[in-house]
Image 1 (cartoon, helix red, strand yellow):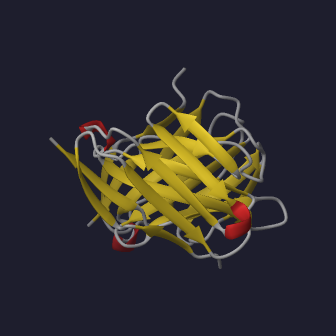
Image 2 (cartoon, rainbow over the protein chains, first blue to last red; image 1 turned 180 degrees about the horizontal axis):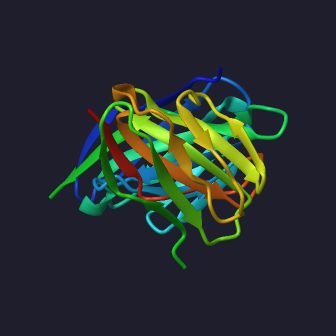
Length: 112
Length: 115
């Protein structure tokens, strides 16, 4: 099956710093999504981004599907950005549906 | 707008007991799915549904049943709980019927412990 690798696995930032998280995938995909799992365990959809660039406040994401990677940028990080960031790619699973395969995540800790 | 609602939040079962994890969404989404999240294993798909009356197996379906009698509800049944089913379970939905061609929205999860 498809492999989804995220880097770095762990990241510690001081508040106000910027960061880039990377997601590499081993095969062509139908689409890609980024999620944030906060320290309480909630999974929040950040971006649905099969290709191109999107921005939402301090966060932005870029997917280059032809080169099989996506980047998540966090600018001016805040303590509320702490948690685990997952990318997930959709690939054909059965005749009726695709499925999302999740990467193993980047654990981000933002300190004061 | 509640989104995806899961109940209960926490549950402890003894080996061999059965139970149902409830999931409901109020967004009129066609696609609903169940994942389990385990340390070191990430999120894995258990079962999914592309519409009312249609369900199919995911990557790790053994020991679980689902049904989809309405668009809104997608319960997950554990038939005979085993310690290997100790996990955090997430229900998720999206507008798109099958290609996951729209954002996936998760419930807040159910933490299940089987002793």
